[in-house]
Length: 103
Image (cartoon, helix red, strand yellow):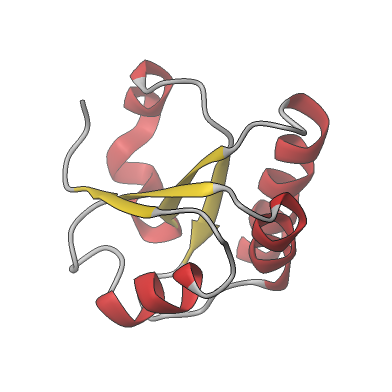
């Protein structure tokens, strides 16, 4: 089930915001918790990782395709671990920010 969500999110980002240099990274496990509140966030493309540290190929390839995108990690270390943040930072020349709660 999750594999389709990862690929669909990356495809949506490519189609609807192909040149946006800010990407919102969310743990897929937080999706039910966040629900419709995600619509209140700035309209950045959303990509997903898992809480356990799995970074899907679709997410990796979309970050690398953008080259120097800034990554905004939604949630504290309980949502996206420091290790995942580090690995994501190696995929981009941009900056990695952590936003611990919804704005």
